[in-house]
Length: 126
Image (cartoon, rainbow, N blue to C red; front, side, top):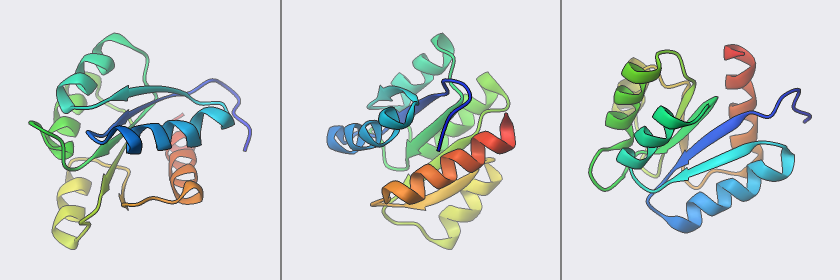
């Protein structure tokens, strides 16, 4: 995969190793990454940086990934967002899609799967 521009991805997960694993997947293929450990930190980054796509873990300390997505949507309008959860079920899927998530990925995510969905989301939005 070759990027025609340097897209920025926001990776939000309270698990440091999960954040770093995703960063290590995206940076070698040309993405710029911003890491956040909470929904509040993610919102600050969205307000202060150019972000092209956001990945949110569902289970974060104060705001859930879904709640963070809803706030980011109010601030940013159209921004492709992907929710990641270890307990993906139909209820969560419905809630995420009604919050305009591009998709919901199950944890642990494979390198190929996450790159595939991020690429598809960027192609659709940009």
